[in-house]
Image 1 (cartoon, rainbow, N blue to C red):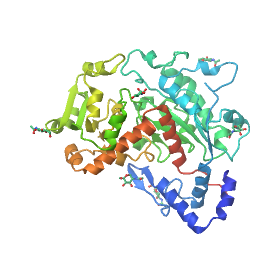
Image 2 (cartoon, rainbow, N blue to C red):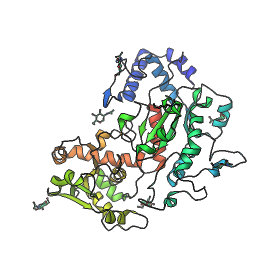
Image 3 (cartoon, rainbow, N blue to C red):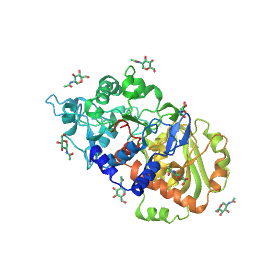
Image 4 (tube, rainbow, N blue to C red):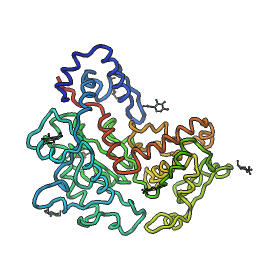
Length: 428
Ligand SMILES: *[C@@H]1O[C@H](CO)[C@@H](O)[C@H](O)[C@H]1NC(C)=O
Ligand SMILES: *[C@@H]1O[C@H](CO)[C@@H](O)[C@H](O)[C@H]1NC(C)=O
Ligand SMILES: *[C@@H]1O[C@H](CO)[C@@H](O)[C@H](O)[C@H]1NC(C)=O
Ligand SMILES: *[C@@H]1O[C@H](CO)[C@@H](O)[C@H](O)[C@H]1NC(C)=O
Ligand SMILES: *[C@@H]1O[C@H](CO)[C@@H](O)[C@H](O)[C@H]1NC(C)=O
Ligand SMILES: *[C@@H]1O[C@H](CO)[C@@H](O)[C@H](O)[C@H]1NC(C)=O
Ligand SMILES: *[C@@H]1O[C@H](CO)[C@@H](O)[C@H](O)[C@H]1NC(C)=O
């Protein structure tokens, strides 16, 4: 159903139906991150980038949500040009997985972008992904490698970060200004930014191109960013790709479901950096916890290509109820995803970190967020066993649905796009 049909239909609905819709709108859109804190909105509070508009546009939007197409630009790998531009564009292994997940989505329309660039159609709502690499992921699937080529996909040119900055920034700008995207204000372009440090973020790398990142139809999904630095509502977090994860057996899964006893209340294993000794000192002394701070060599020996499992990293996680996920060198941590894979509850200390698919994954249900000055043991021991059980299942559920695979990334990003506040203010 297109938006015109939706509006026509709405007028014929009963008040009760409208109330149910309003409730749904409320449920979908009630949280926003603004000015350093989460803000709860209700439709009666007319203050956000979208709520200043007539509520009826949000109702329209709910109908439009039923009707969207997943598309990719045709500038790179999707290009049908005889120049084979796609082959010219380098690609990380993680991006190859992601791209294949997009084009196997049920609603993927391979011919739409080319057609809509020529004949923009306001009645079609698009969720658009780039068909070139924008994801500077340096550690997947092989962590800490000096040979960056091992994380690039075979059959594509060996261009490292420069291909993203030099070749792909203009393509991102082209997509964000494309009539195919702009025709329907609720169409969205979703761009991955997998950089750890802010100096490599696309907003920096594509400097000079301010129109892309100020465009309300562009959502950037960041693996690692301070939430105060993104535009409220519009941008989102992306879960790091797990490097070393648990593949729980059916028996282990049903143990999580039934909340069977686990040996460790809390565990952490990792490098002895960034104040972790202080962070975990008290915990270490508590019976029923496992804390092991390792030197760089021992830690990497466990993780990098061909590494063994000499530290029982995964086994310890699968024996833990809670597991520490402090930030790494950057704000994010691969460990967050790895903890979820084990059906353990992540305990996080980076309160400024933009959480993956926040608003789609309810992190209050799946993780413990420790603020500076709070005591980890006080907090986790105060959680009731029933609640702990729910949280473990929430964590494993988030892993299965959104974190474990690039198909999960696509699912999460589409869920984010569909729950974003509508832009179609002018629908009339
Ligand atoms: C809406 O919020 C912004 C930022 O918090 C504030 O500057 C503005 O005055 C508010 N507007 C209304 C109508 O409350
Ligand atoms: C391939 O990439 C190089 C380097 O960016 C560029 O000069 C060349 O024009 C590209 N070729 C095609 C066919 O796109
Ligand atoms: C896919 O896009 C093409 C080109 O715009 C269009 O003709 C076709 O109807 C679309 N298919 C679906 C299933 O929406
Ligand atoms: C883009 O924004 C930055 C910072 O906001 C500013 O310094 C720069 O001049 C802008 N560039 C353009 C081309 O407007
Ligand atoms: C996980 O384990 C199952 C068997 O228990 C196996 O079939 C599957 O391929 C494994 N998946 C991964 C990603 O290793
Ligand atoms: C630690 O906990 C285990 C299991 O609850 C218990 O058997 C053991 O006696 C405890 N050890 C100490 C030193 O309290
Ligand atoms: C997230 O979970 C918490 C705890 O269960 C709950 O209080 C809150 O309402 C949930 N938030 C949303 C947006 O569902």
